[in-house]
Length: 311
Ligand SMILES: C[S@@+](CC[C@H](N)C(=O)[O-])C[C@H]1O[C@@H](n2cnc3c(N)ncnc32)[C@H](O)[C@@H]1O
Image (cartoon, rainbow, N blue to C red):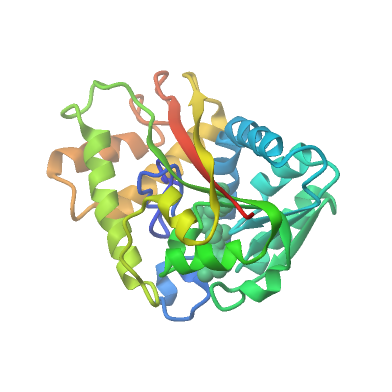
């Protein structure tokens, strides 16, 4: 999603909010208080899968780092909380071949995709959070990427996750990083700065999304400090590069196209006329300068992982 920083998307359209990945918000968060039109996670499945595929190498590298932090044989049960369609849970299962790996999400349809794709390797647990943290059971490693921001009280969510850790267990939160870049500074349409202006508009949308969440709480998003307040010992912070140079493969171009179409739908009213015109060319499937046809489209982002350890 546009989570550009891999991660933050605030709407059906994937408002990426510059954090790495996709922030989707909405409809799926199971509280029943978000307007139905707000977001359809199931419809987002294919897009979420591509977004996770983009980060596959970074996630594997992060998983190996976590494996080293945990120590040999220490990880017997892994939870991926807010796992979506389970691509990342599947990568964690490769890094921890001896562990039971469970994808947790509010969406039964996304979990079904996860189960099917993994051929039974992944366990799944449907849970509407924060009400159903009790369904998660215990774990030696809890990973959560671009999901905690869908919960109104992020600090309380970290506290609940910390409470599921076995002694010595790790909580790894991938909730920040850098917004993605996908075109050169000057790409021949409109005024340079287009991507930064899109990100700024998206940040506003993300803030509006968070403001609407049930029990929403304002928080300085200092993740290491939040992990400490959740009762965990700091385990370190590392950032992993997500780097797909031009020319992009067809599926990743389609990913960018979907993301830009969503941005177009969500941001039309807040973008200036020139940026709107640029966006319209970029999403035109036939235009030589459209994102599907140009040779200079790439995908560059960074995923930051913050770790806390239970004593
Ligand atoms: C942006 S996706 C991230 C998917 C995956 N972790 C990744 O990084 O690619 C957020 C996921 O969190 C799930 N989610 C959002 N709110 C939730 C809630 N209240 N309880 C459980 N899952 C939730 C959504 O269904 C969605 O699959």
